[in-house]
Image (cartoon, rainbow, N blue to C red):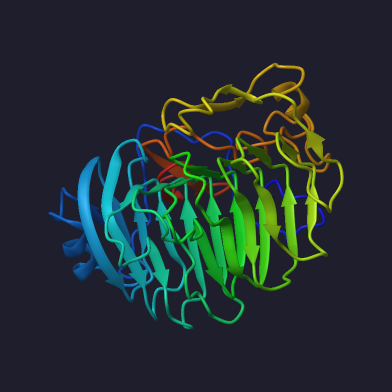
Amino acid sequence: MIGVPHALPLLTAKLFSRPFRCSVLLLISSTSATIREVPSQYNDIAAAYSAANSGDTILIGAGQFSVSLTTTKRLAFIGAGFDLTLLNGYFILNAGSNGAVFESLSINLVNNSFFLVNINSASVDSVHVKRCKMVDTIGGIPFVGRNFQAANGFLSVSDCVLMGAPWAPSGWEMFSTIGEDVLFGNCVFAYTTSDANRGPVISGNPSSLIMRQCTVLGAYRIFGLTNSPPMQVVNCIFHDWVAGGSWGNYPAGATIDYCASTGSVPPIGSNFIQLANDPFVNYNETANYQFGVSDLRLNTDPQGGALCTDAGDPNVLDLDGTRSDLGIYGGQTPYLDTGAPNYPFVQSLTVPSSVTVGNQLQIQSQGRIGRGY
């Protein structure tokens, strides 16, 4: 069970604190699911997409690639880690893209006519973005979730860095969502400039909203919700507010619990920690968030990081079994600095309990590319 408090909707997954390493990787293959590799098998992502069938994985190696892709297939796009695989462009998901996965990628938005993932079909029921770095240097473009209107739709964004630039004079949001259940887990939301003209970090009208183990930096407003969905914000840190910043618009029945801020305390919620000092090992408030330089691990300052250590919901434990820390490095699926490492792993092995003399030992394995988590 991922580290969600008992009161939150529960999500089940096979999680591993350490990948299973072996000298030989055995992958079950089938005609319905194929791994298509870029650039070893296909020169670019578009060529791999054209050849792919729903259920396939497009494995993208280290390097820089351009992508402008509208997909109607259920595919997983998996990179070598967001320190190794850089995509310049966008994805648009249309009908047929149910269950799409984006993992271990660094994606730079390069065209202000498009969103990073523009989910514009009521037929798309779920999208998962894992361990990605997503950068908008243009400003004003929501990253993921625009027009995601499928009934009972689900959008999960976990262990990601979302970096945005304010767009004067519009003040558009960083992340917009429409109509779906949304989960943010162990994510960084960070603005790249000190411009005070910015909209809310998260806006729209989701069916529900959960934020757990997130860190929000350089915000003027946190929420800009136009409806009153069930909403829970747990084990998060809010720091480096723009002068005059506020929590914005969110439902009166929301739960904001076991969180910390160097700014104002939210009008609702409990177990909130008011921080007098910067809680992070290395964060320059003048330079704002600097990817690869800023270190958002908790420091030992008694008025900063020490207050956030072992201060999370007591029902949520860190990997070492202690009470969860606040921020991105806490919980059962802590943020990884480089995204998913670039190696294969075996997920499970099925071995018969016995075999008669002279017969072969049949061992079945299941696996995939990427980190086992």
